[in-house]
Length: 347
Image (cartoon, rainbow, N blue to C red):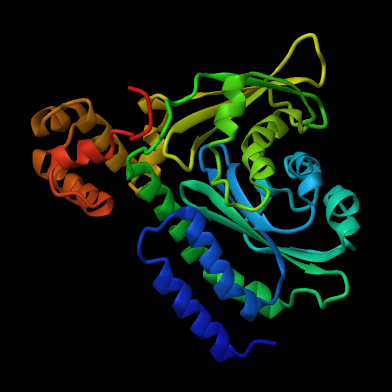
């Protein structure tokens, strides 16, 4: 069992690591290596999420239920499922006794006995979720473990959000043209019944090929969006925005197919700048008013026009712009527009 000093040292190292923007894949792996000897776990999973829909996008992990991942993702969207991801307010530990099909169908059969879920949520929404798991022959997570992750959750959330901002500002480096829109047709258990070349090309770009089980991990965003529609909560359509590891933005949307009950069409298309602007502004932690000002700046308005439109003084507009520049890491309106111009998104 880790000592208080070991936990404090771990917290300091995680905080130091997360103060600067980093590649989101590398960041997650490095944080896991810091947490593993202190918390104690072998299996883990850490998806990033679109805070607008709170749906998982790019997930990575080390576990042995990859073949059952579609079933797990489907169950994780069911409102009646204990500890379903959208309903989690903070770190939760879930063992086999509370029940639920997630454990009965997926986690329990591969020997997982306890799970600690850490939703990474702030005032803007859910940016990701860290799942740590222990085997059934290991001791359950303790209250100390839960308190430690609870204290660390805001730091992990901010780091995940900042890495999303770093991705948003980075230029695309696609070696090949951005794929055209594509479609997957999935049935009620997320079995893919049909797909187009465009959809397959997009999925192949979702996570780096070096990530374990990259093909399955890459399909998770499509399955997550489809699961929201199939979960039985009266949702007809759902969507998430995701940036591929090569830098292109995509919008993944799901809708029910009529009259084929239980069948969902998942469309993956290139994102337009307007599709991802609000996501980018949230990633920089801008307030509601700052997002308004930034959006108007992108339209080409000057200080006076912004002042008149928002019915505030030019001095107030300048104050908002100073705060926006500091958060985005720019110094002028020209730099701000260039940074927020959505690299990897269509015009």
